Length: 169
Image (tube, rainbow, N blue to C red; front, side):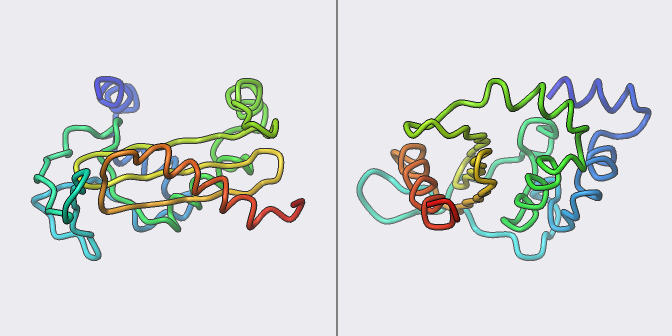
């Protein structure tokens, strides 16, 4: 969060505006916005918590507006896919930067394929994005509910979806 303030100050422009100019705009992410609970955001999903047993219940309201650089954005699957693809295609980072930052340290799944995974969650919501760097398959999973074992379940779903859409399999 502090880094987002420092970057905004160094750029002489507020961090959210800089993100819009340098990332969201070029990626075509028109539905990605700061999560401000005081603003009416069209299409905002209601968030739910799912206990180990029992019915989902509304998640507690959280004011994420201060977390600009640490996950304070609401987005759509299409926008996240666009950001991911723009990054991997070299539209947001130089290809040499991407090669140095991502590819050498990309973890491998049990079959040896390089997987780039970015996920996050908060009160009642979760996002999981992953790319199989060898096949080019990119998958985005969003949920407006979160409960126990979210991480392992989503990773298993990614593996099954990747296998379904991977032309090499």
